[in-house]
Amino acid sequence: MLSRSARSITAQEEIDDALYNYSYCNETVTINTVPIYYLEPNTIISAKDEQRVVNGYYIMNKITIPLTYNGTTSITAIKVPERIY
Image: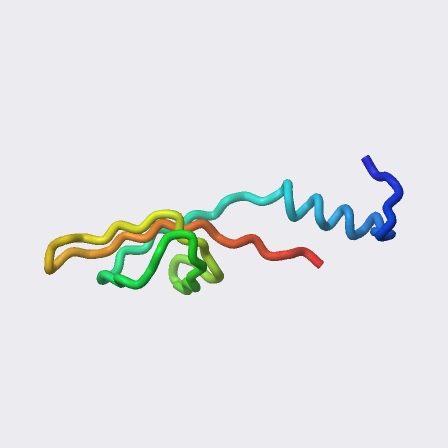
């Protein structure tokens, strides 16, 4: 599926782009914390936990905010894939 291009993209660049777009395994993390009211879905957060090997940037796709005074917030996020260069 390679063809000539006016931008003169090399085969290596095309392979890297195909690997980035089609060969990623989703890594999901769930975080329970005190309520953080300014967070919104579809924003990028940074998470690090050395015991559970969680390290990197994640996109929040679900957040629950409790209406009680002593509740906790649950955040579900998917890891942002890193570019292969």
